[in-house]
Image 1 (spheres, rainbow, N blue to C red):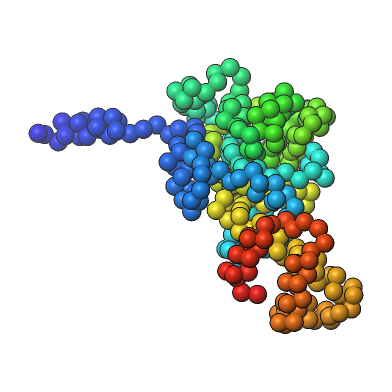
Image 2 (cartoon, rainbow, N blue to C red; image 1 turned 90 degrees about the vertical axis):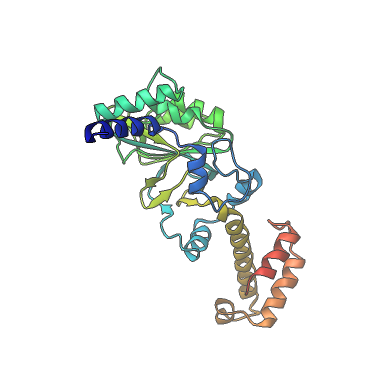
Length: 310
């Protein structure tokens, strides 16, 4: 076999076995990205963190969540300085990511052709494609590179569709249009970088459920987001349960410490340093007689103290 024939056969074989890059990530790729999650998953491969944990997460402060993640080595999960549609209504949910780029005709042509192959909607813009994959409990998180004018990913029509599917809202490193209409969608919320009356122009969706950057944060599909008036934190799914219980105990320790300081039972230095056995016992007695409902079960609390050193 001469060299030209060999090279021709090799090229044909490569073309036959090569697969086009999907717009939406495969379940296997998402599972590989989130391999430390050992629980239930959605059909698309994303971790299925429980609704109960998502609800408890709403009561965790940004500082508490940030502290837990930093101690685990995750130092790039926070982004602040948002325009928030309803600042006093926190939002938690499971992340669906989308990456946008400035429009380049040849790339956009490929994305649209591949989207057609993947049975994505052919009417309207590609900015509707991430909305089509949302399910209850999802938060649509998009990097649209901070574009405000002509960078509006949604208006109130798409906002209504997002809420109907997810019962949540959006986090956009970019902008929206018709903010007044979005404000009127009961239950919908959004963390955005700006609002503009213009329509989306000269932008292209390039991927769904791939790793993206949101300001200072690196975000993976299947992360869980905690969004509050002071910023947003993206939490790896496998750490959510530990973060919630750790933050809940920290909040209880703070509540106990503030109470005892007001009572004058202990000095500030005693509360702000390693607790003595006396204070530890006092804290446990206080927990056992907590004046209200604890955020966690007794079993969760017992397991927490079994596995951790004060």
